[in-house]
Length: 222
Image 1: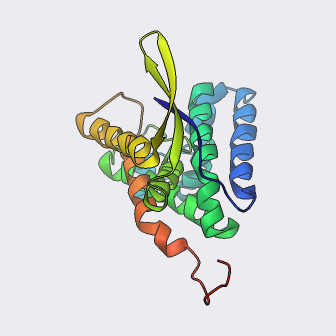
Image 2 (image 1 turned 135 degrees about the vertical axis):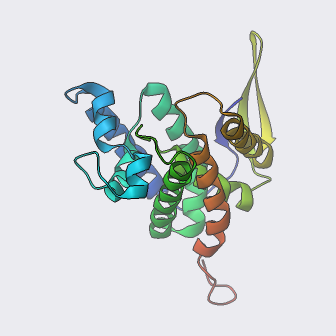
């Protein structure tokens, strides 16, 4: 099941969402030409759980800095394509709702919480975490809370047949969240920080209402 767009119009241009997507793509292109390749780049600038908890750096950057640099690093084309697809579908509506600057803060905070959520579940790991999925999980948490009934165009694979259907965001994102939690508990595919997704998602759920600007009076725009 692959979502590819939603039926949820916005009233503003999502400059920040576009900017984050562009930044991720530029970093990925840089990775491709980095001496030593993607793996060496990830080792230098990914977020290492044991370093995040002990503040003992195993890299050329401070562990707190690595939390942010790791959000813009991806391990391959499918990795970045999937993350940017989800951010492109759901990020614009959250940015539209909270505003450009608040969306930057929201996105980065969800990414930080996601990184530490995984670090606490695997505190001795020296494998670097990379990818925007933790922060994007926060976006999904916000979206399912604010727009549960929004229709999401989804590609369904039924054997050799492919069908496109519209499903409520509650179903699409709810199923996604359930699978992240299930894989985290059961120890799903190794190499994926499942609990980073869970932590980011919960952060988005809890944080989004605090990020929405309050109306100053009846009839005033948000």
